[in-house]
Each structure stands twice: as C-alpha cells, then as structure tokens.
Image (cartoon, rainbow over all chains, first blue to last red; front, side, top):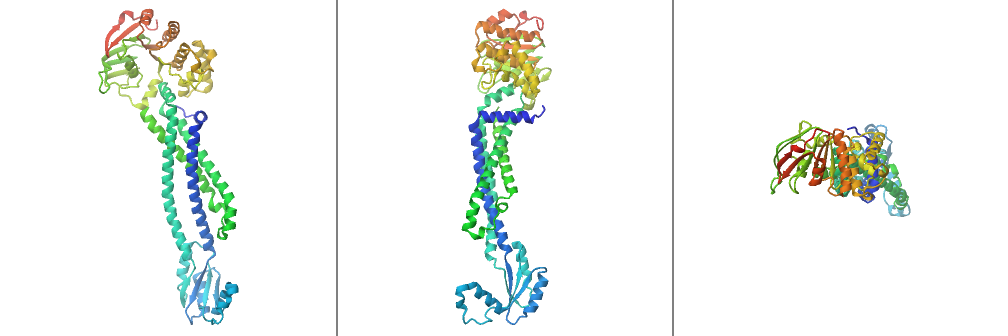
Length: 294
Length: 228
C-alpha cells in the first residue's frame, strides 16, 4: 500500500478536531512536562554561562616568598603564560590597592608596614574555562620564589562541581519526566484509540492494515507533542522576557546573562523535538497495546 | 473458492462451535448457510473472514490455506471479501458516502476515483441522494443498503452476509436480497448466514444446514448453475 502522508495527516487532523478534549489533554500534559524540563535546563544553562562569565574576569596571583626576585618572577610568569598580560605587583603597590579598595575604611591599615603584604605577579586569565584556569595556576607554581598561587575561585570550583552533579541528576530527572509524560499521554491517547475502536474494527473488516489504522494516531501524537513542546518553548521565552530584566536589576551578578545563555536556540529546538518524540512514543505505546488486542 | 476440510472450532470450556465440517463453495455460487441459533453459522463466517482460526482442519480461500495465516496477511485476504452484518456496522459519525468509501480509502485509491466509484455504488443501491446524510438518520433498510454498497465497493470476489435481513421488514428484506442476488449475477460468490426460511424458499439456492456445529445437510437439490 502506498504511504500517503497528506491523507494520513488529514485523517489525524480530522480526528483531533472531532476529539478536542483528548487532544488538549495530551497537549497540556506534554506542555507541562516540557515547560518544567525547559525551566530546569534553562537554570543549568544560565548557571554555566554565569560561571563562564565570572571565571573570565579572574586574575591569577602568584605571591612570592620574602626576598624573591620580582623581575625574575615576572619573566618566568610571562614564559609560563605566553600571550597573557603579566603585571608585577610590589608589596607597596599591593598595600595601596588594598587601601583603595577599602575606601572609607582604609584607616584600619594605618600603621601597617609597606612590606606587610608579599610581592606578587598577577596574570590576566580572561576567557579561560575553569579547567584551563586550573591548569594555568598549576604551571605558575613553577615561578621562582612562588610561595602561593591563588586564583580566587574556590567558590567557583564548588559551584562548578555542584552544577556538574545537577546536570547528571537533571538528565536522569529529564529521562524520568519524559517517561512519565509518555505513559500519561499514552493513557490519554488510549482513550482516543478506545473511543474509535468501532472505526478501527470496521477499517480492519474492510482490509485495513495495522499501518493504515495506526498511522493517523502516530501523526496525532506527533502533532500533540510538537504543539505542546512548541507552546512550552514559547512560554519559556515569554518567561525569560518578563523575568530577565527584573533578575538583572535585583542581582547585579546576573546582568551578563543573555537569552542565548539561558535559552539557546538548540535547547529550544531540543525541547520542541523532545515534546514531539514523547508524543510519538506515547501514541506508539497506546496503539501497540490496542492493536495487540484488536 | 472456499474449501473447508474437517474444520473444528472450539472455545475453552464450551462444546465445539464447529465440529468436523467439510464444505466446498465454488466460484460464482450463491449459498445459504442456515440452522438454529448457536448452530455455528456465524463462527463459520468468522473463520472464512479470518477473524478466527480453526482449532483443527484446513480452510482454503481462493486456493490459499488460511487456517494458520499470519496476522499481517489477514488484511490482504480481506480485501477480496465483502461483509454485511445484521447490525450494519456503519460509522455513525461518517456520512453515507464516507462509509461506502472506506474500503476504497484502505486500498489507497485516488480521491477522485473514490468519489466516482461511491457515486456509482450509491446509485446502484438507490441511495445517491442520501450520500451526505449520516447513517442514524436513515431507515434500517437504507442502512443495510449502504452496508451492501460498502461491501461491494472494492468488487470483492466473495461476499459474506451474516443475517443481513435480520433487522428488516419483509419489503426491505427483498430489496437487500435483490442487491445480493445482483452481485452474484455479476460473478461474486455469495455466502449468506440466515435462519429465515422464507428466503430459502424464495430464492431456491444451495442450502447448507448446520446444527450444533455439525453440517447436517447440504441442499444440492436447490443448487443452480453459478450466477443463475
């Protein structure tokens, strides 16, 4: 039998129009599942983007032991971090910067000697991922006279580890949500299949194959998934548009976030396609259970 | 056309619905299958229609043994068979025209050909003017004529009818029977399950009698030449 996609789609659309309750229930279920999954993915994606932005502003400081040669350390750092800005920071300059950063409270440094802080070499580490930053810090430990290397990212490390664990947990959760949604939608679609059991029976009486009977149901599941997923993607974009300016105003650290960081197009496309896949799996499950009995 | 060899059909916990039935229906014949309720008439039709498989014995349709046919092959066998039921089995949510078009849709015929064929079929059963109506708005006789038109839509080699006039008054019964006889005259083999003795007397065709699942009589006396 020739496969006629237009004919099959028309039958699916007619069936959806004749049973709007089932269609809306299936779509709503997929919408909620995709929306929740999308929210979770957006938080993860935004978190990772923020981490990248924050890590990009980091400078690696190599603190020197007393008596170490600052010029020698600077040259060594340049050799270990080629192409990067390397700035020698003598103890007196470090104290001045600290004083400046304290502003009105700078008075607490009164009486502190100019050599209270160590000489240091600072290496700009903009644009590096956390792993690369960690590797650079490791190399800079070889600077002659280096007593300590600090890149001020212990909290970034912890956050990164947390996000990594969250991503793994999130993937497992997404799998479960997808499965639960497929089962829920499958049960809804079973109602649709059941409601049309007489039609299916008669179609089979006149020689319809399982493929002929089942194709419109599969298309129906696919369309419900596409519509549910598409609406969820739209809702996520609307949520972003509504919340992002308020979040940036309330939390300055979130200001660098753009839509491409939180809801990149591949993620949105993935959500829509995921919804379609869930709809397809659900209709396949519903149909398989019915046709086995028909 | 239809050959049964020692066919038995049993359901768990019940006496056999059919027991050791051997029967041969030739191409172009018009055969009545009769007997009291529970005699096995409908079971025999279900076997011929591949809705059920015999428990034992062989069943040849169009020369092919369908006793152990796979589920995937059933639709292809059914495309050579038209079926008419006592309760019409029309889809109430589809128009008369759409109901008749079903077997043609299943065969993936182009829409234009389907429309043309449906028009001709409805004309042949006198219901062309009812094409856009829904079955529940039709009388029982009209609904059965629609069912006959649907059964004949794809020019089947074999037409099965299970008590096709069971729900009709005498006048409507004759209308439907004339349609079945006309199909037979055009070469379609017709097998009708009925317990209406008036039909047997009126049409004087071959009569096969079943009682408690056994073939007790094959009325060759009524047998006439194929298509007569």
